[in-house]
Length: 173
Image 1 (cartoon, one colour):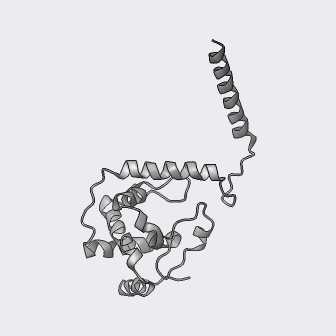
Image 2 (tube, rainbow, N blue to C red):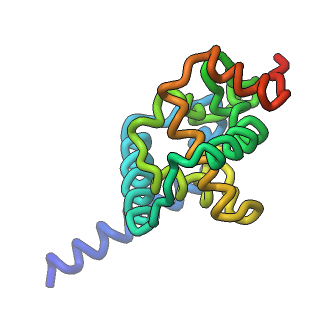
Image 3 (spheres, rainbow, N blue to C red):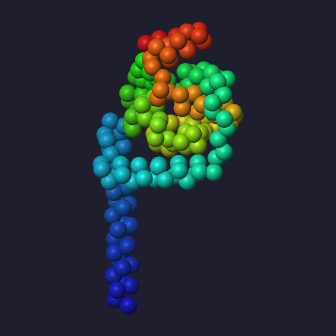
């Protein structure tokens, strides 16, 4: 009985300390203050495992369709390049102020499956600045973006630029 009472008191004290911390305002929530290592680890594990869990049953269409990638370029150029950049294209100043920093997809995308890219693009990621495009874009539009994104790691700056020229779009810095 004493062990149960001590356990309950310990839990009550921990809950009280949590609420004191929560209401103190002590924790700096500003985007210019990085998380501590424990918080980063928890967020990273939660994000990675959630994306993997929620994306594992998604059926991938044929992403080798050049029409899909061409349509995806237009959407990527319109909505993604500012934060994520592209070969030869810098991230914009909005991306510089985000925490965590948006990944440069043309460098880091190789670690993500098409299902994971689709799920992230459709649903967004809380507290990262990554919006959910599902409410405003069809699955087909999102798959087009994924088809283009999967080509990014092998693309040079000149290849990206030639696609821009072909589509009569220019990146203005």
